[in-house]
Image 1 (spheres, one colour):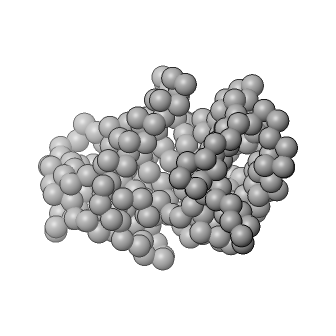
Image 2 (tube, rainbow, N blue to C red):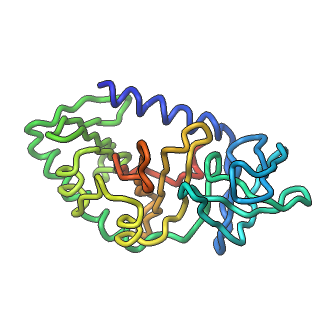
Length: 246
């Protein structure tokens, strides 16, 4: 329960920082969308370099290059209001690639797995929330939740989340929990979007939009201590795109 509460607080912080509509991202190229009204534009890709706080436009900004600093954090080269410099990764939604064929492939296992649970819940509990059926369980290594809407035309998937590697493997066909970012990228390829919360640079979110349905696979990573790479601590599948959240 404590972990779930902390996660809920983190999500509140993330989406409070982007409490305005995000326009559709350009289809090609690498683009940054500032999630803060004002940010520091640095002269170099270094937190100790000279910087100037400037007002950020509510639009996508071209990112011709991105580099990592000595601490393995990303910096994005941008031009804003006639000034060119570097933005740190935190507080930025980065558009990286298109819809993901690889994520679509592994997510196809999800519908079959949740159907089995719906037919024989066993250790899963269920409840109704305003027409949405919520299924929850506590695995040996973490928790899991999925939400569906049941109607005459069948079952509509709304949300899935787990921090348990066995449940992740059961529902998605691959265990992503505990993987570092290079391993995730080798399995899933380039994300559609990447995000780091402004006040929580130790967290990163990789979003993979599916090709065959209006859903997104989200891989949540966390860096701890002196780790050079974040590792996956939760995987989610949600209806819509990151840009739909406002």
